[in-house]
Image (cartoon, rainbow, N blue to C red; front, side, top):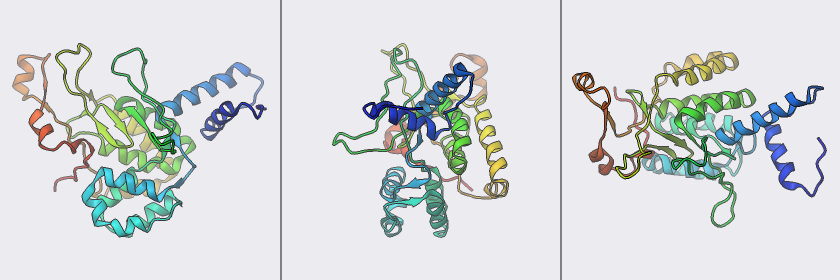
Length: 286
């Protein structure tokens, strides 16, 4: 594909699609462009690694400090010593040497994704989004976001191009899921978000059930088994996973039978007790 040098935006867009294996060259031209557009839409929804498997030590520090202040303070010296650029594999190896399951969980969750927005029709009032590539000072930033039910589906396709990130995708899925299946609404590079009911907004409602979306996890597990069968077995015995403590409370069974249209409430007390809870990764209880 030959692109004039003056069309820098087009050239950069083609480079993004190429990084996700979206370029083909066959005699079936409609199929070529169909594959190109499908790949483009997928990486716009789920993001794409900024620089293959290279990660920034400064961005890793920023991510962990937002996700868990206590862990960031405990390992401040280690995080400060991370180089400006290192491979994702080396990062995980160095973190595992620390033998701290909280640090290991957060490092595995880290994904250096960019060029991402939430999926959905922008005309709908809840789909306010942007493809954030720079901050207010014009500096390049990494950012990804997606509705819980969408982003893992997109990562299934992305994992074909970047199998080295499959474990991180699995960690993110499990650590952003709730114990009872009523999962948070959105996943982003800053953590997860939930919906609150607004009596003045007819579109407001809370969260997503996770029952039929477990298939997304299954596909990631199948990918992991295909590429790293030994490592997948090791994950089963690691006490590193957590759950999302989202303030949705499912009513008792008797209440469900009495009124099947009102089965869940929003725990406003839990929400106000800790305003940082949306970004907290709760360790599993023994």
